[in-house]
Image (tube, rainbow, N blue to C red; front, side, top):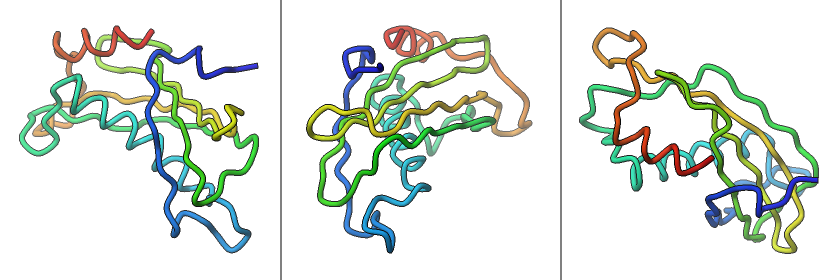
Length: 137
């Protein structure tokens, strides 16, 4: 069983009123938004990624989410983040979403390939970003 302790980074994600669907729980597509927000916040704050001016951007090339237990507004969620694999130009992020009682509600991953914005070709992960990502093993 996966626990929050298995993730080096923990980040609070506040559910929002419009996250709920007609069934009264967070809609499945919103989980990917949580994943994306957690990763990008880390990349900006710890990895020095400048999302507006950088010559390098991360493209999501693969993703998956397993939905284990519903979440609903106004429930707070704790996201766990770790790196599963760090390549030359790509990284696999692994995430878990936990409810207020610590139960795993969803787990997933996505893979970023870092590319040169002008040419759309893969480019090596910068040393600064690699150092930040290495802290998430």
